[in-house]
Amino acid sequence: MNTPLSAPSRIVIASRESRLAMWQAQHVQARLQALYPEAAIEILGMTTKGDQILDRPLSQIGGKGLFIKELEVAMQEGRADLAVHSLKDVPMEMPDGFSLAAIATRENPCDAFVSNRFEGLEALPAGAVVGTSSLRREAILRARFPHLKIEALRGNLDTRLRKLDEGQYDAIILAAAGLIRLGLKERIRAVLTPEQSLPAPGQGALGIEILAGRADVAAWISPLHDVATAHCVRSERAFSRALGGSCQVPLGGYALLEAGKLWLRGFVASPDGKQMISDELAGEPENDETLGRQLADRLRERGADALLACLAGR
Image 1 (spheres, rainbow, N blue to C red):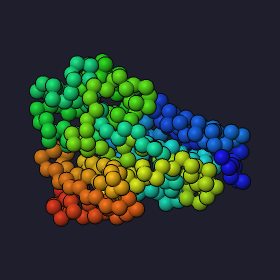
Image 2: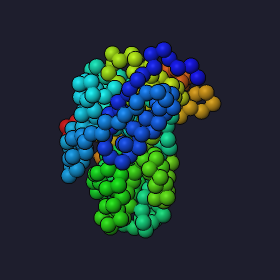
Image 3: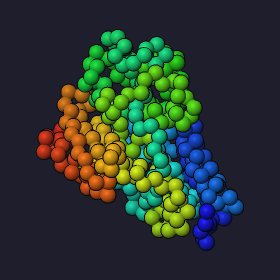
Image 4: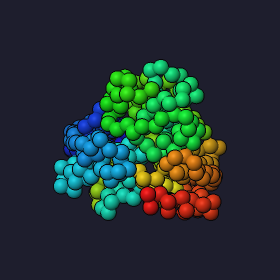
């Protein structure tokens, strides 16, 4: 392997301090260390506002940006060179001065059903309590299983599992990727297919954020970029962005490459699941963001604007 002439002597990775966030940072750290064995690759652990406020749903306290602001400040102040994020937690509009410079290979993008007593959603009796932190998951559950009781579930992955084990919930829905990455695959009772629960845009993928002007850092991390994953995620995020996707909008978007084509599915719904508008499109991978915008237009033609207006007025 040819080492770039501008190989780094030191790289600092900003990360939240939750166990999953640190796994993600350490994963990138190991890959960078393999690329640059002479460099000091360090992790700067931080607690974000999103980690501190646990008594209210994200949709009520400001959304996904609460998990990345402190990491961005660290980059602005020169204390860190990059930040590693779960892409589903990254706002669809990047703040001025920042760039998603690399998207790493995706883990399983699906939702996971986790329960100590039941094998799957279909086995839950009427009135069973299901925990989720996502309006997207809540809308899907209310549409498919109106007899269940859906309650908010906040906290890091370990906290959510502890609440389940304490009996506060009969089941919880989590991202399969996080459980797999932390060696907790055995906690998954059922992986929900995209047909059962369409994933969130970017779910299962890691994004590496840098200051937009740091061409040196962009070059250092370029070997970590996975082109196929990036096409899928860019399409999903463009779809969500075109519909004003945020924690306040129950929205799913999932793309995959199949036989050389990029296939994108998406939906927007009311939180109670009574209204759900969905569609799908296929196109060339190189037109990933255009495909996302086109699918959003298709949903608007079918009434998404009225649904979004209702959500904005809640």
